[in-house]
Structure formats: C-alpha cells, structure tokens
Length: 303
Image 1 (cartoon, rainbow, N blue to C red):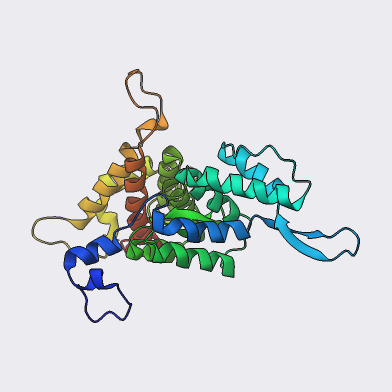
Image 2: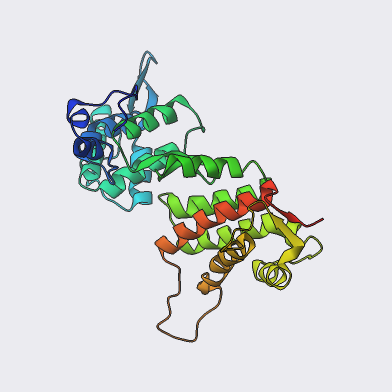
C-alpha cells in the first residue's frame, strides 16, 4: 500500500492491505452504493422544459418521449401506461422507469449510456458522471463510442494511455484501433468486429514499413515477406543470447493473423462462427503494441 499517496481512503482501506484491495476492486453492474448517484445523474437528463398554459412561464418536467425511447432501445417495460399529458402523469412515468432500472442493472447502465450519447465529449455532464463512476470503483467509465460519449470498460490506466498515445502516431491506424477498442470494451460489444479492426489497424501501420509498394497489402502477405527475409528490417530491440526480437515480432503478427479464424467459414460444423470476447480483447491489446512499433519507427527498413 502506498502511504505517500495523497488521495483519501476510508479507514477500512488504510488499516490493512486486504481492506485496501477490497476498496479499489472494480464492481460491474450497478452496486448498491452507486444506484442513487447514478439515478440522480440520469434523471436530470430525462427532463425537458415546458410552458405553463396561461402565463407562459417555464418549468421542467420529465419528458415522456425520452422515457419511451429508452424503453424501446433497451427492450424493457416500465409498466407505465400514461400518455404524459400532465405533469403528475409524467412524474409517475419517470418513477415507473426508475423502478424498472433498479430491477435491471444492465438496463440501468444502458440508460446512462444512451443519455451520454446525446452529450458532447468532455462536457461537464460527462465529467460529472465519470467522477461518480470512478468514486464508486465502477468497472465502467465515460469514454468515446463511435465518436460520441459512452460507457467503456475501465481497464488499466497505463494501457488506456498507451492506446490514446498510439492513435496520435498514425491517424488511419489510430482510427481503426479506436474502432477495435470500442467494439471490444464498450457496452456495445462485437468481438468479431473488434478482432477484424485490430488486424486492419496493424495492416495500416505495417504496410508502409513492410510492403510500401503493395496496393492490396494484407497482414498475411506481410508476415510472409518478413519471415522470408527478416534481415531487411531493423527492430529497436537488440538481439540477446537466446531470442532474436524479430522472431518475437514475427510470432506476434502470426498469432494475430492466424487466430482470426472466423475470416472464412470452417467446413467443420462444430467450429465457432465468431471469436470470443477474451480473444477479441487479447487481439486488441496485441495490436496496440504492433501498431505502436510500426507507427513509431521502432520497426524500420534496414538501410
């Protein structure tokens, strides 16, 4: 335990290592200590401004359109049969919606994710929710999904920073890697797409280094070229007594390429049709290193 850290920790987390580990352990779903804070943030996004009949003064009231959209998108029923014609009825609708979310943690997170998609990246509302999730040690944080704010898995901060930094080295590969990251770690997961974008990101970063004249470069062709004449490229790691770093680099590219087994339909009817979530996450993290090496110049043509 780092006693020099300035961040406050409760007594139970300070008095023992076990207590500290329990305090910092990430929680999936919506744990009891997060529910009310998350609902407070979400409910504020479920209002709209109305004009009072007669004097035209303005007031805020729950928006039935937002409630109904959330029901449709999240595939849930709040069991509210009102039409939202009056303030009391709209309040009742929001209350029913709250009860439905409290009974369904996935829908609760999905509702927050939907509300985030209507905000601007970096807005105070996004920052408020991120603070709430971080303080609650939620397994989810506010990130970007398809260019919009959304909930993404809270992974190791070092890996996250490396991914963001890599995206600045090569714009095209960075966009593909961001898409892979989103498909692997957001609430809208698609493991096969995550894997496919991870491969494409490596192809975009490696092609100018390995196959600059190939108009249709693929990772498979680049692996063959590298395997046939590895001496044509330099790698920033030096050869040690047991392992040639270029052999390790080649192995990493081969692992990424050969394990995307869903590129083609396997005649074996028992073969999986899609990669697993674990495989997709591993592929994205592996692609992160490969993209960084090729985009940063760590791998370069030998002079």
